[in-house]
Length: 249
Ligand SMILES: O=C(CO)[C@@H](O)[C@H](O)COP(=O)(O)O
Ligand SMILES: [Fe+2]
Image (tube, rainbow, N blue to C red; front, side, top):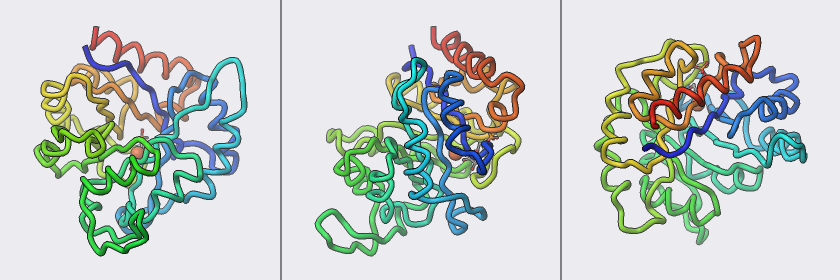
């Protein structure tokens, strides 16, 4: 049985002119996490926003209501220098810092000790993210195979193990793209080997594609246009959750 279903609407499809209100409403509609897409115009050909905006929306989502608690900010860092921004995002209210494997090797930034490493690697970056008090996720673009993660996922040191793997089911950069079912064997392979791992899928997920992703073993579901574009977002969130729970029962 896979870990519990986590539904994480991508706020890339929210109305940026009223982002705080949209985020709070989405939590009230039943979201577990908010998926926050950070794009730098280098790693991907699109730009979104940075830590100051995350800090502002945090305030809207932190308000106490009957329907939701704090709301986990799942920050999907589509940026060329992931190490550089860990502390800024931690201060802004990020909970889970998910960087791209493909970006980690070229990242230059200050280490916790104040030294500058010209190069880092995924293992050191995961340790650094954990040392900063955040959960660590690692994301793979469609062209990257899951075998690159074996050493990390099987590390005897929990500080070096990712808390979540994100399998992209579109090329990162834009919302509203077509779901790539060709990525699902990666999810299947991970689920077979790691029954307790949080496996997130991102890109093109919605009522028409969720069953395939859930059957493959994904339990963390990102959906942008399918949730924010729906007449009844609460119904879509619940449909996504039921599909995951049914597949993992
Ligand atoms: O990371 C990305 C795109 O790069 C995603 O998080 C998208 O924002 C998901 O949008 P939909 O495909 O669900 O509309
Ligand atoms: Fe994303």
